[in-house]
Image (cartoon, rainbow, N blue to C red; front, side, top):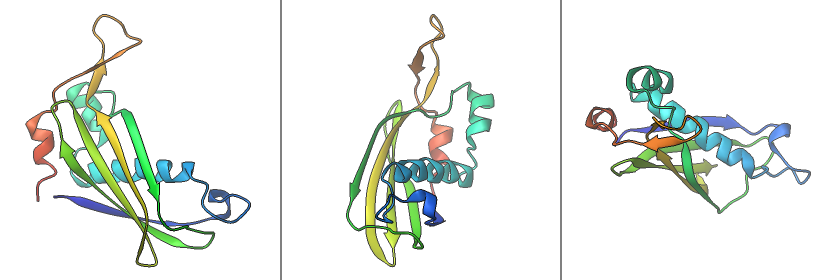
Length: 138
């Protein structure tokens, strides 16, 4: 299973007044890390849009469990991988380590979606091609 790790140095702007990471930033980092994972797999989001007509991989569910605080000045490591392939969705799992300690666990459910053929204000889920799944096998 292909994994990717992204390092983030916690800056002042990432934190709340208590100098602890403001929780929405974790979801931003999850998204960035997922994009890096797809890049590493050779399945760049921009290329997917051009080759398959998908609108990226929209998130339909996101979850995080906060286990240990990260603070201003810390350097965290976000490791991400596709933990489950479903017919039209996939689950990206994220683990954030801070000083060797598991700080945050999270998941995103992403859908392989194209513009709806009858209503351009909606999306339509499609079956994920096996060729995409194969990019993540190691």
